[in-house]
Length: 413
Ligand SMILES: Cc1cc2nc3c(=O)[nH]c(=O)nc-3n(C[C@H](O)[C@H](O)[C@H](O)COP(=O)(O)OP(=O)(O)OC[C@H]3O[C@@H](n4cnc5c(N)ncnc54)[C@H](O)[C@@H]3O)c2cc1C
Image 1 (cartoon, rainbow, N blue to C red):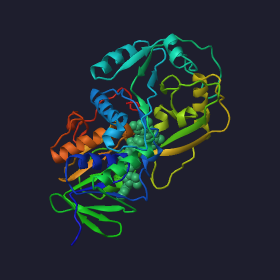
Image 2: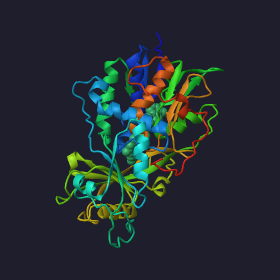
Image 3: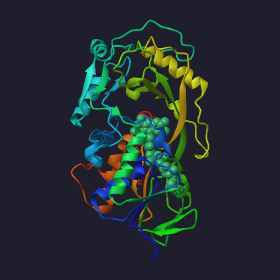
Image 4: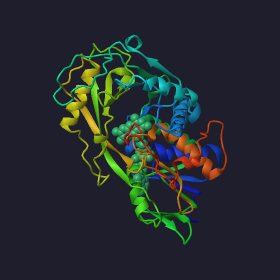
């Protein structure tokens, strides 16, 4: 007898497996996840810095981030794994805005209304909490590294319950949880085509020509999502571009004291977070200019970071930690994520083709949001809800929305 499924999910990244798991937690649907690679997290997810921060411009995004991060904080409860591989690292997320001294207090008030706990730190409080961190509000010269006289006086926002988690370990946990719930996850299977009749989705065909009938197909193919969209005759008025993103790893010098928070340093245009229990720092950019390099072919792009990227980010890191050398051996890599050029926010939910669902265009936001996005889609497909489901209205990220209006289109949207 020919195999059938109720739901086919394309892609075993954090999104595909979160969706599959959220569906399986509340239904007896026959769910099949198809992954073209031989392992989980082969796309954006494996390269993710996996920073779990709450603050976004839109309240709905704060809620989705909060709900996603709650799942990561309670990972063993959420996955129902007694000993999960991944563990939430409760480092706090520090926003350093520089000379804007009004922002932190305003955001603290807004986030409190959304049940996100924060502290506002002045220079003294910052030094007590993170002794090695320079509180300077003046932008560093990241090109030549010319020194300036540092000046404090800023007000910095600390998200108490922010942090990070190992992205690959988290996805491996989700794979185990999905398999326990009888989700079939198949590796080395490329979806070549979404099958339709005149009105709706009828299943998928693989690159090997195998057909799998199903009334629901979910595109969670990350930077490859356009290949799935391109072969369908569905109106899709959004431009999604796979984009090359550079990340560095640097060893922490012994005289830089722990703790080091997750930090979004708007003054130096960098973000960083601890890694390997603080032995290293993961270092990246918050600048829009570093999110412009379109990847034409997601199967083949430059994985090595650029020298000028390394130099500029190391100068900015040196500014925050003055004893941190701005020269020396640096490791790094490039991943890619899918930028929605219209409004930098993802597209989640039903399309004009009945049965065809998308969860794509996540930019640098997708990791933290994934459990909540899985919840949105599972509620949509099953009509059922669980106590820990997100309550954000599904229309907020829908394909037929009007693009959101943003002050700045960047990863910090
Ligand atoms: C460098 C970097 C840093 C980031 N930092 C953060 C951060 O700090 N915080 C945060 O929240 N987010 C961050 N992100 C974003 C986040 O990682 C992504 O939004 C998220 O991982 C997207 O997950 P996904 O499952 O949608 O995509 P992917 O992980 O790309 O998964 C898609 C999967 O689909 C598979 N696939 C594609 N086409 C097919 C097909 N036709 N058939 C079968 N399988 C297919 C691919 O092989 C892949 O495994 C970062 C991303 C990068 C690259």
